[in-house]
Length: 252
Image 1 (cartoon, rainbow, N blue to C red):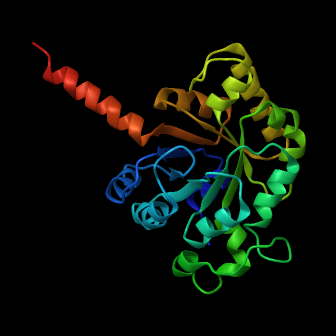
Image 2 (cartoon, one colour):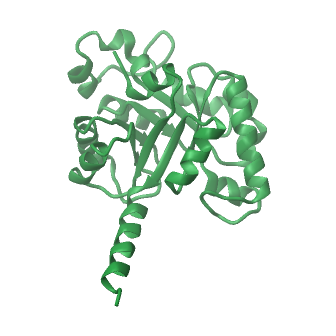
């Protein structure tokens, strides 16, 4: 049983993802076919609803990428349902303590290690009847680090059993640190906090991901040691492309 992101990590490579803020099947499959390793469906800060996500995940899988979901809250039953509907990666927002991590992980692991209820509708189609025995190997679980509290509790969060890695939310982190809400920030407190998170994650054998606003910044983060980067959101890509073509249209 494989997961493309896990396979890349095993080979010592970084996974590149696109962040989805627009509901829809066709563009999700189209972006998956571009060559991204994963597409992250954002339920927290977008108009995408759970029913949209359920329909988008098979399209992403069909396009050759792993369907990840950023939950709208760190709720184990929400995570469980997304996994049952085919999510191969779960990113939980606003994880601040080791207890938050354990609540998340237990919702995604079957007994005796967890409390996940059995009903893997789409995973059974992808992996077959033997899914339950190896279910955890098909999932990536990441906790978002985006608050001062999370920074304070980072060692305990990273030491939590069952957590694959952490994912930095740089905009909320910047606000928490008294800086401008900015992706790809160059403000010293944010840069230092990001570097610290990366070092601590690697020291504990955990993976580190970060939300990026551009391919250039994502490339820098991979060079620094991050092994999961979201290259850019679909809405930003659409607007940037539209602006570029409008400039071409208006050339004398």
